[in-house]
Length: 260
Length: 255
Image (cartoon, rainbow over all chains, first blue to last red; front, side, top):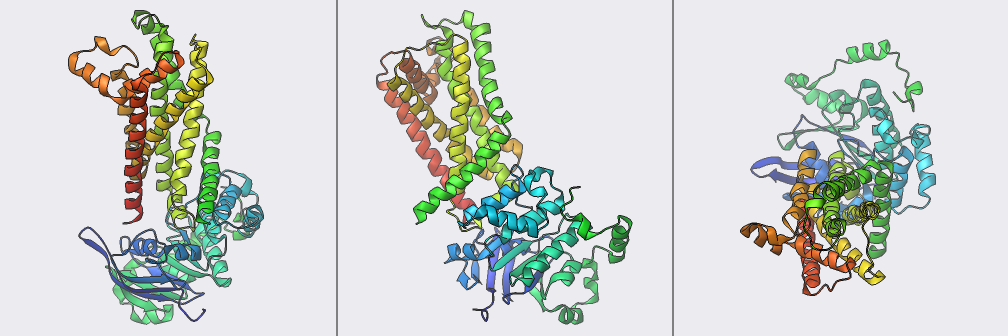
C-alpha cells in the first residue's frame, strides 16, 4: 500500500467553455509527503483540487486518490480524503466544538464528543471551543477548519491556499499545524501562490502554469531549474515579516487559543 | 445501509440547521411579523370597506395570509442554502463520505418546520383578532395537509435560486412575485369584481383554488371539486419544483 502513490494524475484535462484551465496535468504524490502545487492566481490549482476531491468532473485523463479512481469510485475517494477549501468552511453559527462534532457524526464515527474534545486540545482551541465561530479570529477559523478535516484520520488531505488572506502570525500557526499532520503520516496536497510557503512546508514542489506542470521536484532541484525571471513570484519580503513579528512581539505559544 | 445513512446524515444536518434558526429567532419573527402586519392592515384599515358576503373579514382573509407567510418564509430557505454554498461548507459536505442528497433534504425539512412555526404564530394572531372556526379535527388536518404540500412545493422552488444565486440580493428577489400572487386571487377580495383579463387570471391561478379550499374547510362549507384542483396544483407544483431543483443540483455537482 505504501508503495503506491497517494495521488496519481495522468493527462488530466478540464475546460470551462472555450477556456482550457487544465491542458494536460501529470502528477504523482508519494504517500506521507507534503506536496505543494504552486501557481499564480487562475493557474488551475483549485480546479485540480476540486477534481481530486470529486467536486468537479474532469474532461479527460485519469486521477486516482489513495488507489481509487475519482471518476468511477467517488464514494471511496471521499472516504479517503478531507478538503480544506479556500474559504474556511466552518459553520459560524455553531460553536467550535459543535463544528467538530458535526463532522464526526457525518463521518459516522463513534464518540463524536470525545473526538471533538481531543482535537480542540490538540489544535489549541479548548477555551474557544465553547464559543460560536462567529467570534473567532481568521487564524482560529483556519485552525478549526483544518481540525475538521483531520477528523477520522483521512489518509489524504487537500489544503487549497490555506494561508491566503491570513496575517503573518496566523500563517505560522497554520504552517505548524500542517507540519504536525504530515508528521503523523498524512499525505498533504497543498496549493499556494506563496513561494516561501512551499519552501517552508513542502517535501516536493510542482509548478502549475497555463494548464500544465512545468516543473516538479524537491526545493533543491527546483532552485537549479527556476529561471531568474521567476523571482517576480515572491510577494513578501521575509525581512519585513521578521520586522513585523518582532515589532508586534510574536510568541506563538501565547497566541494559541487567544482571541483577537 | 445506504438508506440508514441517508436518514442519519439528514438528521444530523437537520439538527444543524434547526440550531441556526433557534439561534437567530429573528428570522422566525420576521417571517411571521410581515403577514401579521398585513392581517392588521387589511382587517382594521381596509376590512370595513370589503364586501365579502356574510363572513367576518378576518375569516375571509386568513387563508391568503397563510400563503403569503409561506411565500415570504421560503426566502430564508434559499438564503440559508446560499450562505452554505458561498461559505464553502456545502463543498466540505459534498467532499465527505455522506449521502449527498442529505444536504438538500435537511434544508427542505428545516424550511417545513420553520414555516409551520410561522403559520402557527399567524393563526394565533388571527385568533386574537377574532378569527373563529367550528371546523373539526379532520378539516383542520386537511388544512394542515394542503399547507404542508404548498410549503414543500415552494421550498423546492426556493432551492433553485439557493443553488444558483450569485449574490444575497438575487437569492431573495425570487420570492417577491410569489408574495404578490395572492393579491391577484380570491385571497383579499372576491374575484367577481375584478377587470376582465385580471379576473380570468385570478380565477385560474393556483392561489385562488387553494385559498377557497382552505376557507371552505375551516368555514365548514362543502369543498367540492375545488379541493381536488387545489391538491392537484400543490402536488403538480411540488413535482415540477422538485424535478427542476434536482436537475439544478445535479448540474452543480456534475460539471
